[in-house]
Each structure stands twice: as structure tokens, then as C-alpha cells.
Image (cartoon, rainbow, N blue to C red; front, side, top):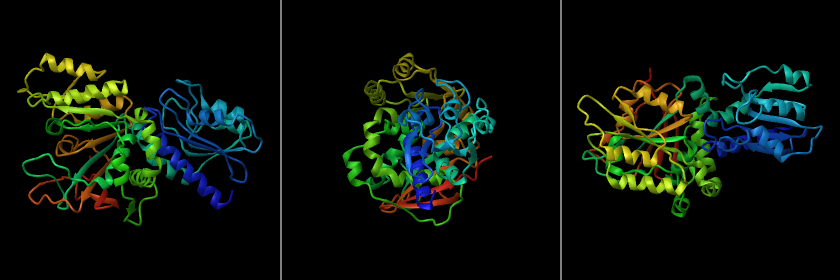
Length: 413
């Protein structure tokens, strides 16, 4: 395969992983590409909705005629266990490609990772491909994190003014980021499995948190430019944002047509002493009816001074959530992440004021990422500074008047 054909294959893997991410549930968003010996693409596919085909099975369902000249590349090694579908390894061996290139071994303990003797016995060559690993890591990192730590891959996001403030001193509700980045930020919601907000945001903004695309967003979106030249070879956070900006406009219509499938869980942390208005619950009821699924998750911050939850609040929670509200102490950031990981949430986006930087301060790891969107035309001179604005910078981008910073949390333990 010549260099141009190889580049085309890697680019296709990146796009497929991006399209899969956000709609595969607890399953990894895997990409699969089938080529001939010259590198011409015969078929391609990605993991389907949770419970549906894995990438390999979907690919071969599109390419039924067995070809003696098949070369398969898959971002994650084929599964070896029975789940909602039979093992993909058995099906791949039956198809008998000449060669398999893999991006990553599977950390799932149910998979016999690295046990490739059956491939060898069938005359199939198997090897790891570092470049395939690089282009697929942004989409697989959440799955890797959850399987290895039983917690999601955490992103803490904040929109800030040119001074680095996320709100005015009086916490007045006002827009901080510009419309030029709205489409990209909505697609980020589509890529994660859950979006979370803290008690202050719930009360002040009555947020919806669902994924949506409007014509205004498409028309206002500006192209993204990467400012930083050098990045680590395996950097999932930068890779995800780079892909997001690269594919924003080209995939907007696909995501809009599959809006229901890309809806994240909406996670709300409530303060029982400052409960949200009826407007908030009305929004969530309408979204539940629109998408036909209860995708809200509630956590209740408790301490010795907290009042008992009103019965009507419990009823409202039940109307939009499949789960009871979970009580948490202010020090229960770890428990919060473990519960979400146990629900199969691979990637968590915390839309931040000052709650999550405090609540999760001792829980963030080197893999987690901080996302700051700084609007250079918005001024909040006497505002509240974003805690993480001076952390180690990994990547920087420009979208219209917005500078996008990706940082590593140095307050991790």
C-alpha cells in the first residue's frame, strides 16, 4: 500500500471513530476498514448503537462476497466473548483476511487480549499499528478509562471572558462564549456519554443539557485553527478537539438526522436547600417525551443541615429518570464518578462554574482534561476566575473570537 492510500485509510478510521463516538453506549466506538492489496477501500464501518453490530460485523454485513485479497484494519482488536453479539474474532477468522492491523489491544477483562494464535493457525498475519492507534485514541480513551478505572474520562469545561472569568461577581446569567463556536460545542455534547452541571447552574440557568443543532449554529460556525504546533503523539484530548473542529460542518447534518441516538445523559447535582424551579423540570419532561427515553440522572448534596427531600421533588425526579436521586456528601466526588462509571458512561463533560473544580479536585487524573473557551471580545473585569485557567497547556485553537485551551489538571492526585 502506498503512502497516499495509507493516509486515506487512517483518515477514514478517524472519521468513522468520530461518527461512532457518543452513540455506542458502554461499547467502544470502534472503526473497521477493509482494503485490497493495493490499498483501495472495499468496505468500512463503525460500531452501531448499543446492542447492535460491532464494527467488524457491520463491515462484513456490507461486504458479503468473500475476496481472496482482503486486508482488515480495526482500531480495537476483535472481541472474543459472547455478549449481545457473538465473538467478532470467530467471524473474522471465517472471512480469513490475509492481514489484520490493529490499533489497540482490548483492556476489557472479558476479552482474551493478545491471544492471536487462532489467527496464526488460520494463516492470518496480525500486528499492532501505531498510527492507527494514534488516530483512534481520541474516541477510545473514554472506554479505556472506564474499563481500567471504573470511572469515566472526565472533561471540565468552562467558557471565560478575556480576563479568564467565567461569571460576573453577582453571577448574573449572561452569555460568555460567542455564537461562532456553538456548533462545535453542541457536537462535543454529542460525543460524550453524559453532561453534568452543579447546583448553582441548575438553579440559575434551568439548563436543558441536551444535544441539538440549529440552522443558526451552522451559519454562525467559524472554522477552527490549531495554534500549537507540537503535541504528544498519543494525546487523546487534543485529538478529540482537533477532530471536532475538523468534522464540525461536514458531519453536522448526519448528527442532526441522528439526533436521538447522540443524546447524552443529563446529570444534575442538586442542593436540597436551593431547589430548581418548575421551569427546569418542565424542560426535562418535554425532552423526555421528545426523545422517548428517561436520560436524567440526579445527585443530591447532603450534609447534617440538609432538609428532607420533598415528596413532590422525588415524584418529579421519577418522571424524568430511571434512577432514584443519589445522596452525596460534598466530599463524595469519587463516589459520583464511580456511580457514573458503573452505568457504562465512558466520557463525562462537566460544564463548569466553580462547583466541579472543587467537587472533583482530588479525583482528576493525568488523563482527564480541562477545556476552556475564552472569548476575546467578552469582558468581565470584576468577575469570578476559572480555577483551571493556568494549568499546563497542551493545545490551543482559535475559532472566531474564541481561543480554545486544552489543559492537563495539575491538581490531580
